[in-house]
Length: 386
Image (tube, rainbow, N blue to C red; front, side, top):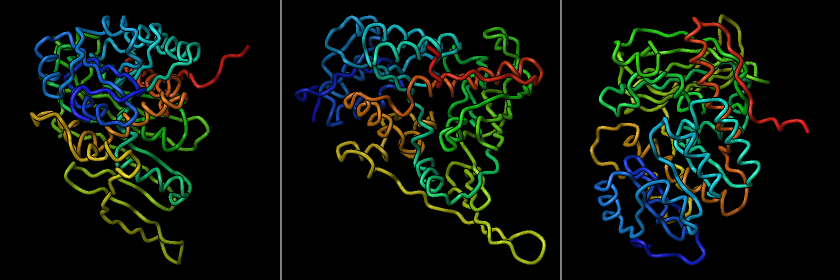
């Protein structure tokens, strides 16, 4: 399909926020179940640039115009992090299906309202967490589901990224409040939710950054306990003041297999295999570098190419560029959201799941601000008693 041509009966989707959001416009245009794509941005120049580039005729000045339009079915919010919660609520109240980039919100009561609205309206909500659709995640998921890992023993995850020079709303942001790129893969692989967390801050932000959110830490690290799973999860998130190249990573270890994200993005992951117990001290463990397959085969043919290509051209945003947009995850996210809406079912990352993952990070930052005091993580996946 070229440009703004309509496909009869397809979903009408508005992409709101056209910096990172530009990544998703051509994927929606190519999806066989999408009838029309609308683009919206407060920046007139950005709106014109993206609209012209992809031949999108329907252009709107912002979310308010989108929500007032009766012929837009769904919105994909790719807007500043501080706006996600209130914008999601406004969109659901306006009767729109919602896809929203991470985090879902910055307050547990706002998360609770999103969960309530999804249940009350029957609309589809999806948090667009790239980390649970990367080719690495999909590979490990197949191994876990097959039982190849054996009994799980431990997990470690990290999101390390220098945010200097990013828009002002990122300056001084509490690192663990933006945790899901690291924690979500482990929770998704185990099928668990976080139960409690101990966290500590590390380093010290300069005063100009501390005053924005009242957060003094450029780096925070946590240990989580999970419901119903006998493993601990270690998570570190850095945003400033740490000399380390970018990575969004998870490692998972069982008593048969272990998977380890590479130290550097251009390296291949490691797979560890434990040999059967024999005489002597310790069991042999084989370590080998592996090639992780691309999973374009899981997608409709018209959007398969997007696992290996990306729109963002400047090269200065590694999380977009790596492996075709967050390790090939973008078309998988679009397909799951569109499929959930058209099939009338909850998305894989529905409001309760998104709230569970997001609230874990909010609790983790609270613990760091309380010098490591244990904080219980609220749950949103349990239906309230009648």
